Length: 454
Image (cartoon, rainbow, N blue to C red; front, top):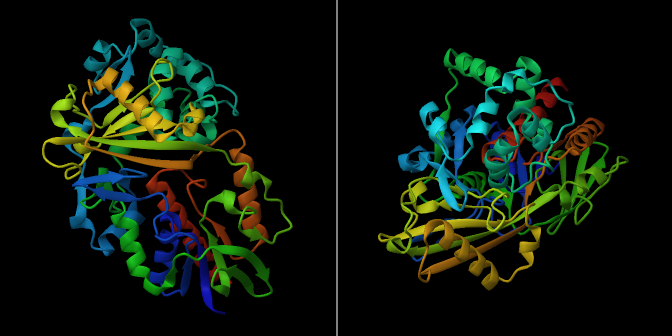
């Protein structure tokens, strides 16, 4: 055998799997079709600005990621979010309104009407719903249509780039369905979970809170890639994955490689569309995974060109604010230090998503004009930006729709039918950086467990 484990894709999932296997003494080879590792985690530097082209932060790290950050000597490179970033804004009536963080603030907030607040008190008395509900139906039934419009809709646009009516609650937000099934109420179940977590005695080290790195989030995949050294091959797309009598044969740009096991950590849509997998099982559910397209527009402007104090993480725009076209904006220079030079601020705005996929067809000039118009209305932005940076992701974020259970079932069936094959990625266990990292870590662990049994 040329190697024990071949890993396809050097995004954060593939790097996590490779790191775990490599540090345990396994021989690994990682094949990445692009010119750099990290997948969608990319950091751009220009004119004293630090711009995240993909994810902008990590919201807490579990034991595995915490361990790796320590082992890679990245603790000193970590930066925690600015305390001012605790504020999160949602737009209502063309005004960014802070999300209330206390009961008195909730009672005073104009984000919800008095009627909507009163309806929330009846949530514990709502009946359970069907298992195949959309997130929109679930929230409207339990919490009311106003909470759906001014809390959940903008949150889903900010996290998934998606629409609540297209996401399945049991796949996209399974904890909500679990609370309803177990406790009959989100409020009661949430309170019981909070009391239980306060007495949790788990001593596994974890990192809490929102954080990034001094030189941007790409610091993490760069360190993982550096650790792997020659085990990582860039600019080497894989064309075919073929099972053999004693393992797998990979055909790629540099020839062929034989491996005992394979971790597939590249985007699912590439299977059958550039990468052939010899299997008697159909791959259609994998091809049908929908993605939300996304475009980000980062504007650097003089600090005095914005009338809003930018005292928060950012703002989200509900679909109900129909005269506005953007999905939301991150106040990047408030969130972490060193993101913009003195006297300037950096704003990263998102457009498109499942709400407005047609915006992906706009020119960069039209997109920039649309963004500046909405930021003028919402933040009092004036003048000409000192720098503008556009990034387009045609397939940005997988959408966990009602069909996602069928997709997961097919992945499980493929792994069961083909010994030594594992799948990892943001389509597996969640879309966050932490979820994607854990997906790769777990895939590597399952291979190690299977080998121990053999």
